[in-house]
Each structure stands twice: as structure tokens, then as C-alpha cells.
Image 1 (cartoon, rainbow, N blue to C red):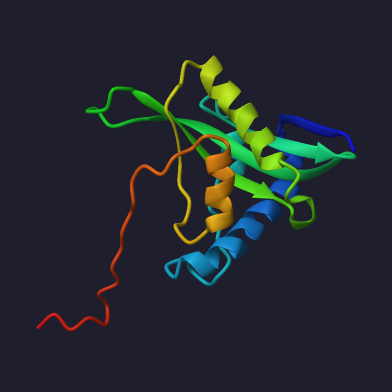
Image 2 (cartoon, one colour):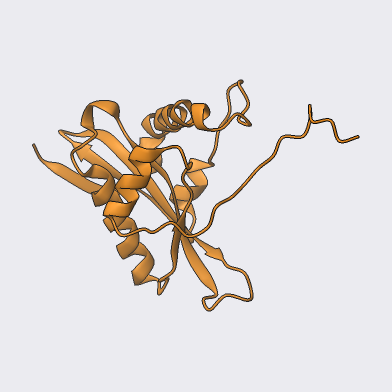
Length: 158
């Protein structure tokens, strides 16, 4: 089995849009605030064509089976670094999970960031998405901050 990690092109958009819907389907159980209707998380075309971001894919036998992007973002003025590399759209097709494809994509994204002198890398993951957290920890990520929420629509505040 030959695995190729490469930058995505606009020709890859149909399969990447399918991956995006797969990712949304996988994340809905973790987030009750996601709309039930058809949604998109990303402007994948923009991520592919922008000089401040790039999408990488994994191919097996000429079939795209995994994806991820890195985007350079201006960070908060009080931090030691001016920019961060933000990773997202980490998706591996179900039949190819467990083959370290996510790590290969992340490695390519980290090299892309480092080549642009971006050394602070961040990503978001749902707290209950234990398999994803374990995969990110295997690549060196550490938990850093917890984002908390409260739905007060039906809360009696009187």
C-alpha cells in the first residue's frame, strides 16, 4: 500500500466537501449547538488557494482518504508570538483509520508552518472526542485551555 501526502488542489474539492460533511456528522453528537440542517464549516477553496493556508491530503491507490489544513492566524497582542498555525479539517475515511494517516497529515502541516516561521500550533477538539484527543496527544499536542458553555434558554433566573 503506497501512501502519498500532498497539497490539495481545487480538483480535489468534490471529495473534500464529502469529507467535510463526514466530519460534521461525526462532531454533531459532541455539540448540541450545531444546526441540524445542511451546513459547511469551511471555505475549502479559500483554504486551498490562500497564501496563508494550505490543505493536505493523503492518497492511497489514487484515492484521497484523509485531509487536514493549516492556517496562519494573527494571535492576541499579549502573547509571546504574533502568529499561530491553526490546524483543522482533520478527517480520515472510516476504512482507513488506524493507519497513522492523521499523523502523516499533521507532520506535513507542521512542516508547512515551520517553513513560514510559525512555531505556535493550535487546534480545537471536543472534550468528549477521546479518540481524537488521543491521536493529537500522540503527535505531541497537550491540553491547554478548556472552553466552557452554558445554555440558559430554559434556565429560571428569577
